[in-house]
Image (cartoon, rainbow, N blue to C red; front, side):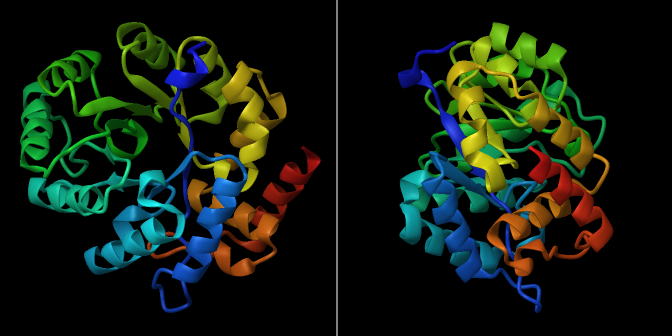
Length: 289
């Protein structure tokens, strides 16, 4: 395992609470961020996949980001940058950099499919070059959503082109073969695992930490996995169950359960709030842990 001083630690891929008017419920969000930090998360990541980032408009993103930076400190805040237009990706990133935030998860341009490695390199490099004082860039590997994989050769090329900017990779592919190759090829980067079922194994093999959804409701439970690489079969079983449902609404249902506040369960269209029967099944499995 990596020396503790060289680890990234745990960042909560935070949910985004919404009001009945489908606006970000900032009061609940800030309370949730403070709760996550209090339970051991080193940072929080806003506007990612779990945070329904593509459902939050540019005006609200800025307002929420400023509020979060003020509440817990900008140095604890990362954001997901999910855009296909380079200008949009740059604008989202600059908001974080201008506030002194910790870094960004930079996803590939998800609208386009079948992109060549050369096309991906051009997109990433032009976006980074256009950012104001970029730093802490984590390349975001999430092929189940983006339908765009990040080849190891591309990561290597970007790392060498932007050595002071590319900090690591968030790997949410859920494929141990890819994760193992990533850890072997890029030991100088922070390799952060999104799939809780692979986290302990990855930590034993040199990973730096995690940006994941389960830290929204059981961050303390993840500590042995991060600190000692200890497997947690019960938690893995809960992941397997969660994947039978829409993942983000499922996580929000569990946050609503642990906070005893049903408003946290509300999803923004086109996602739907998890129905009571499915939510009850998840809650029962969680309580069984």
